[in-house]
Length: 342
Image (cartoon, rainbow, N blue to C red; front, side):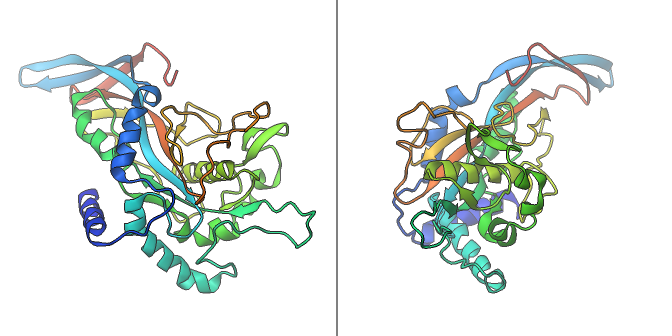
């Protein structure tokens, strides 16, 4: 489905179908407003070099130049929540939530032994009070940011790089990825799933939130905000790579209309040069950071003040781009003044 027709369908559905209320929700205008408020901190826009182009016409050929810029784009809204189809983003829940729930509770629901219709906050353990029941299951979605497509419109001016993502497009929905997200197949067989210390969100073994692998909805984490953050990191890890054993659409955009774009690579935990996170729900943050903060010396911990009563969480994923405006038919080379991301 092309982006314009998909967007029209989305808006029409929101207008004509009622939305059930959740304790913590966010709307598209709210996402846009909160993203704009964090732009100065998270975007990190700067001129970083020069591009050289060869332009030819009937009168001959000449070399032209354009400024190379670097900045972070808000590519995705990544949500982690309890109930299947209950994305805290109101418009996405109204349009895609029911379809996701129907698909998961249909054929896949009859094949999988785990209950699918109400998976949120399910814990594992015996009745023994000495058990540490902190194995929690959560859903997750990675949806194209509302401002992603706008970057393509503004890109022609040469001051912004076109995003690889399309607004409102569902790149990952855990309900449609039931086998891998719920049953850990084949995620459980990766070396990083079997060996402690590989792909940790934090510093293992002294301080870690949890592992990126296995990239499923199950997390062993006593603090709910951290468990949600692990799910978000896993979702971002999947969609920024190709050929993963999941049901998803990888983020592989065009080179940019009227631009030469150097897009970001795969998301890597604790690496700001691959992407940073801005919390939208339950708290609005105007800065971007990576997950895995060392909070051992904090009285409340990273999750203090970030707990949502409904278990709904959402973040913007900002990813770094480099680009320059097209000034000729052929790109010759580029010169970098600064390393980007800095």
